[in-house]
Length: 422
Image (cartoon, rainbow, N blue to C red):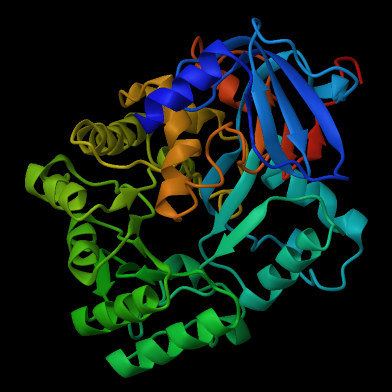
């Protein structure tokens, strides 16, 4: 009945929040189409009234918008959705170094190019220097930088003596700081410190490639202890799995989110039993399909082999989604220097996800995963005014998800695409 009442309110008349900040700035956003949520019918010739950083009211062609309210003309006339979440990014690029003291002008452009340029009003940092990311987050929240809400897992935990081969070129002083707990108690202590310094979750590398086919695995009691401590503190456990055995280890440890699919030989793909375990344990998956072609191309893997391996990862996503698994959109941008997520949308569609399912992976699914469904993920009165305006309808072409005209967070316009010709 609650959902029916909401749909009736949104589709038949202007729907308003009962609370209005008395002195807040109010403005109106109009669009050719509004996606209220993936599970609600879209509204054509729609409008959204924003007040005090919240959505005050929503209406369609049959509802007269309030008179005398400022219109956000630069963002009008597009397709409106709730703000997007990228559930896998990194702030490890040198452009973000020294975030506490670096001049604003040096940080703003790389921050926009990584996040708000593509509609991301919330991002999950899945591993970076905690102090630096914390400083960046603080400057955004103080209004010194225009950027998304940042959720972070701080510095990831690796197996004992298990730094992956692709990180070994980091400076020695950085490598020494990467946690590699040898015991359950050490893992708990690392998680406690991470949360005390601002983390909202923990990332575990339960399996790491060492080169020449060797995989180093995190001890089961260590992984479980880190997960238990994270859950005790109300956080999420995010796991880098490397291979199907790592996915299984993540499930047994108590993972909430698997941050990658895996690229494997046909004999090592995710089994129906493994997919069933993921779904039964309510473990979410961030596909990062675009990453695999990027990594394999760097390694000079022949094109036909690359395509075969990426297709295998697509099949994992298809099986997981078809079984009812929760998919979270994420790209690994920041580690991956290709920041444009267009190919991720294309590959997700090739894996069988509909535009509506992709929209859910960007909006309602991550809001639910991070226990924020009561305030974001939908364009609904009383919710945060986190909005994206697209230049075209992604229902007709998933590439339209990157056709971002404007990005708005908490009622503040963070990104406006320059007009054509500029």
